[in-house]
Length: 171
Image (cartoon, rainbow, N blue to C red):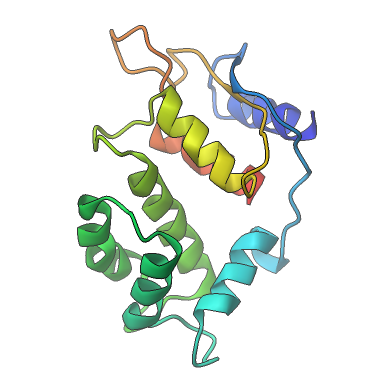
């Protein structure tokens, strides 16, 4: 699978330990990137959310779009939107690279239903299904101590760092 091999190389490059543990099965498609290394799907969402066509996203535009796309987002994810916007925006607007970072952070919070700072297997599977547009997905979760399992838990979990790599590979 192209996506798993790519993630495996990224894990090795980041010093994350293989071998991976499969959390879901699926068919992966190599991601297409737009100029600047932004995934094509992320760039398409940016254009969709840019309601006024200004080339940047206002807080109102991104808040409206994310609330429409994720009507049942957890309250803490919704409450974090203004904080994340301020963190990634350049003045009053988000550029495409800023949107990519904010969107990945938002998705992590959206799928981290229990708000514990990691995705457990069920949360990771929900994220994977979303990334794959509802299609069955195959991806690997690296075992600890590579950052995927919570210390001492013995349970496979996805960290923010690993989620960021998954986002870049699957969007």
